[in-house]
Image (cartoon, rainbow, N blue to C red; front, side, top):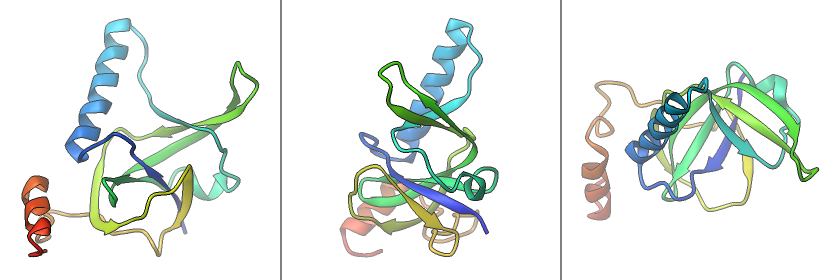
Length: 144
C-alpha cells in the first residue's frame, strides 16, 4: 500500500495558482536551455522512501485544506553547500485535484497513509466538478 507525504503549499492561493507556478518554472528552464524536472526541496529526508516512490504522492495543503496531489517519481537525498542534509522530491508535473479536507497548519511534512488520503476528484463528481472559485463562495455561504 502506497505511503504519501502531506505538505503545506505556502503562498499558494489555489490549484490554478500551483499549476501556474509549475508552468512558469518549466518555461524558465526551457528559456535557459536546461532540462526540466519538477522538484520540491525539503529539509527532512523521509525514512520510508521505498514505500513512497512510484506509488505515493505529495498531497498539497492549500489555504487550510488538502486540495491536490502530485505523484512522487523519486526522492533524492543530498547535502547542500552549507553541509545540511536535504532531499529533492521529484514530482510528476500533473496536479490532481482531490476532495477538499480541512487540515491544520504544521511545520515540515507528514506521512499520509493511503487509507487516510482524500480521494481524487473525477469527472462527474459533484460538487467538486464546479470551478474552484464557485465552490469557495458556496462554502463561505455554508452551502457546501
